[in-house]
Image 1 (cartoon, rainbow, N blue to C red):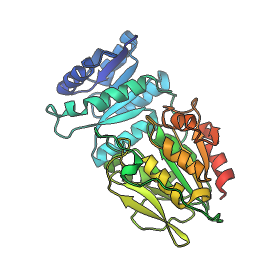
Image 2: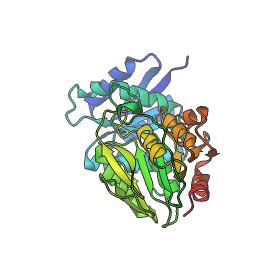
Image 3: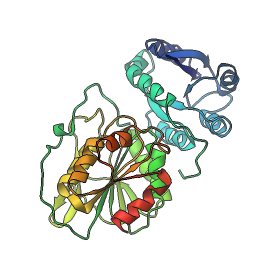
Image 4: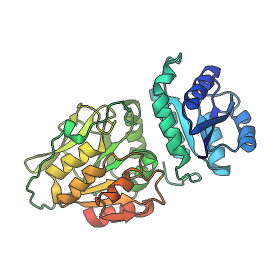
Length: 356
């Protein structure tokens, strides 16, 4: 089997050493080189032709974002950012994802040997990036933290069948992961200001949630905010799940409301898309629309099937336009997807199925 060739770009010698040691643990990965700054990296990319780049942001001679922008314009390739999970780090990393980086891993605030705790996550994301669909800089405007225990949505909300009555009020639930920050932005900016209320579970850590909602708010006609426990879901509004909680939708009389839940991670994520979709299936049924976009893994696939079984319309992003066709692909295999669409057509189908 051909090994995945990785080039590590980081100004810290310690980080370069630790990442090299981490990748050497996996027989499918080969570190072909390291670079202390983008100018050295540029030469080594030409010499070594790596499959994946790990890239730091703050480096001498040229910052990571400038380098990434040039790279994605001249030689698009899979890049995994290694950045701090601070507020500043969140803003920079979201900019990197906007420029075309596939994913990111959080660099511990205190380096030491702490980076080794992230070994499984780094290895998994580099492997995923090697098979990702990477495009040049996109013209669209612009993880919950993973844990070792994986549980189903039963850990948060029990599966049950409920009777529903069709109403004129619709609710939309959207889930995404790897590649999803930009895919979601591309879809949402096409929706009208009077579109039905949308709840979103995106795999992002807590530090990223506020920055991401603010970015979406600048490009959307709808109002974007972080979801608050107990608030009503109303048309023209988009509710982003905080990175610390699952988001559930509950029926309160004639209203739909957001419920935040700090239960255990599901499918290694909190927020979990499966949890949100199940709650929508149970509380909105045929009055809902479920949308699943690009993402690694299978979170959301079972929940979307429950939504479809409950009478909801469902849309899944196609393989050709997904950075990683994991989540939508698994949903398609389970028979959960009613309409498969390229990213540029997802909003059009949402408007057709949910109105607005």
